[in-house]
Length: 239
Image (cartoon, rainbow, N blue to C red; front, side, top):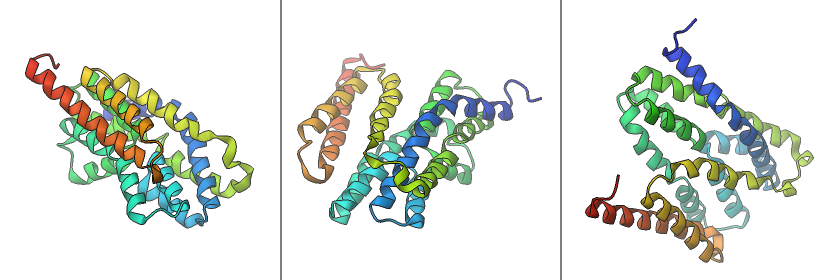
């Protein structure tokens, strides 16, 4: 039986903590399979999309733009903008996992999604002095109920086809998931200002074609958050 602090125990703790997210991953992945096939992609294209991108929000954004015949650079730019948060996730995890072998860091980078990041960073902040092996094991454990299910749910959506109508509106899961993940991270005035600015700008720019309002909101939120943090740091009030 593994000790309470062994890598094996950390792995299964990660899997246990991530288990509730299966409620979100399964219908969301299935919906992508349905929407992908209805957009004209075949099984291998949809599965390749899920394997290579493994990020539901940017997959839906890119797919929508492709069906609207938007220019390729707009689809790519929008998908990158939606996934830009992954760069911040990586920077946040680097102090905890930066000493891992490069192949493990590459695998962790590939497997970093909103849910695995949120669980891992919370764990690392609660126990910052935990051994590297335990931190890595916890991360991979958190991937266990999420990543394989994403692939399987996408495949299920492809095979189920019209049995899961795309107009069920399951895409409401996306904002709910983000709210659940982002809300606990709003710990400083800079975080709150960035979030509010991004929401307001995205709403104001909602009429722009090809979802370019997302780019406006994302970039504006980052600028506002950085400026608020700079001013708070200068005033000595930033923690």
